[in-house]
Figure 1: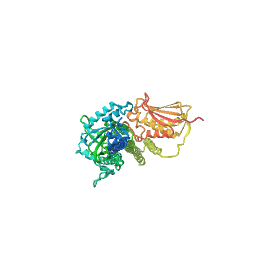
Figure 2 (figure 1 turned 135 degrees about the vertical axis):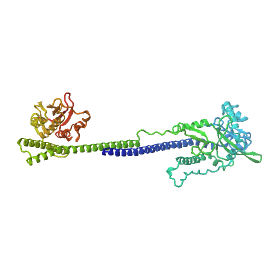
Figure 3 (figure 1 turned 30 degrees about the horizontal axis):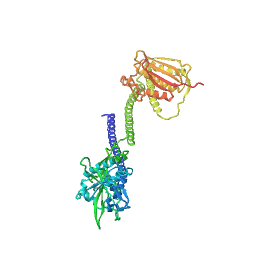
Figure 4 (figure 1 turned 45 degrees about the vertical axis):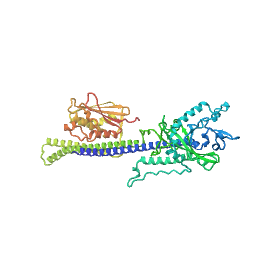
Length: 614
């Protein structure tokens, strides 16, 4: 395997390794970016849920506190201002004031009906007065003093009949809910704070399930909300505990769901109250249940409306068992918040991570391309230098061999006749000039890459410059059996600022190439024409040879480069002539380029800076 192929193979393997590493890094970075975006989205979602729950609790707290602190006598249509329960409405004494219940005319917001279940299971409601209290409420004697209308009482009676079916479990004293509600709750104990799950031995906290921490945080939040809700639900206990003249509220207000035979379960707020009834000289105490039937549809719609900006697709569902681990249970009422679908994780097209990855990929690709270009250029340069060394060796061997042979023959006196001797000497002179040109070209090329003082130039007319150079060019074309034509009329009044020897070396290289490769063309002639083109003086060197193939024009002025056809022709050359000629032309401030013109083979155009007029 050649050195170039080995270098290319190693470079390809390195590129694949770097590309694989970059691909792995890209996948990991994008995965981490997505996880971070998901975590941020989830954090925002959980914060919205937390705020929504607190908003709902804040909206429920006034309602619960109002119902918990409602005096027991409000559950009767009319009551005396003092001792209403001990004397009863049928025994209102002279001078006693009868006060109507604020619930007689209408129910508070979000309430369907307030009712009371006596010890014998009888249901009554302040909105359904009985006997003469009904006439008083409807204003039979004085319509202007009516507290409510017949339609309102009729609707309340319908609701009370339905409430009797709903509250059937509460009318059975042996059921669990009644026993729970009748238990006193004199103090509110602080809610315990759930702790995050313990970290297993040998496992880092980063590997613990995120859901476990969210559940613990939700339970801790729920405990705090329950503590606030308990304060509202127990707000009436301290007011009635030490007052023997008023009914005793035995338990905190408790929300419960009860089945409705004709519909979905209904939400009620229930509490236990102990009443004192006078009977002669003895007193008998009885427990009753006072309940508030809530309008769940209206209440849930109001609560969801308050959080629509946070959770537009949220819903409230019944919470029948206390086994929810998400912490989304409302503390004031047994309901669970369904926050709806989680928001989609949206990642912007241009994030810092993606921009960094794109820049990194561009840098890696650019670096690989640059390294590949440098490697290819270095390999190509090494190959061309190898060919150059071979060409220099070949070019030097021929004149040196001739020198050694002819000088040995002349030194040994083997050539005695004058004519052969003169031929031998002419050959030695010609080969010495050829050797001098080779050495001069190599030294001149080496000199181009060195930093040195500017080239010394002189002001000279274009015609005079060409007249100086033409004899040397004519001798070279004559040796190749070609003709040389000069046309400088278009540059009669033009002058240039150049070094004449450098221009002669450039034109000599161009003419020498034409003699090597265009001498066998249909017209063995070389034409040199000079003309003024604005700030430049242009010198064209054209021949009638086969021209330059299109595949070799891009590399024509590359050092140590010879076309395949030129190398196969056997013509001597180092591959430095055109590269050296262009370098010298640019050193003078001009340029050298190749043009294609009909009727000609190769046309080289040398541009030289014109001298400023004096």
